[in-house]
Length: 285
Image 1: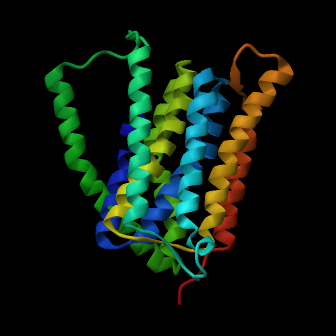
Image 2: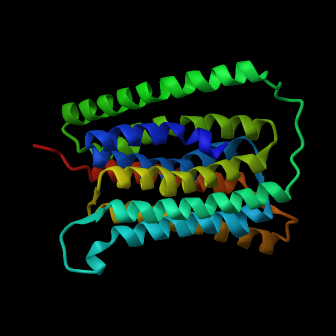
């Protein structure tokens, strides 16, 4: 599910990297992960409190935390040698892809151990119909990626803003719409464990797979301001883990719960992030 909902980010970044719009590629991933974490989780929690599996909080969320930490370290070239600019180069991209391979191995082990039962809520598609839908999606997504990149560059140019701001807001929310829709549908149907799993999985995919592929195609320059975005994702994920653990222990709950109050807090934090981006946007000459 996370792989599918991350497909728009993948095709937008693939198009941007091939065209050399590396600021857009970076802004799309960082903005999408921040939107996933704060906006989509917050909106989903407004429908109902989200029950979360122990494995998601104890294993998968820390993996997501490790992924952003790895990205942050790879992007901090100035710690290794004095420089005014940092890059995610092809080697950094390969390291991220190796991390993605390890995550896939973990997911494979989980699939082998767990038994999934089908649900009657969603009617099964026949093989020809499912194949047709998949083929149509694969054909249309590259066109969508091209249009998004072209539109984002034009918007940034017409408003006099740098591409990163447009990518981290408009493009990021646009490519996160599949996560939003699937999370809201799951929340309304009471499949609350799917919501967190989808968000955590998508954030891992975005960093290790999508950004790994993007850096392998074209080196991505890292501005010093981008480290604030890295910090927001890192500490936001850490805050999620700590709040869930603290709440369960304090209230002696039988399971981890992402409550409406935490959801409202996350929505406020997302509003603060967007405000920060707009107020600190670099105006191009």
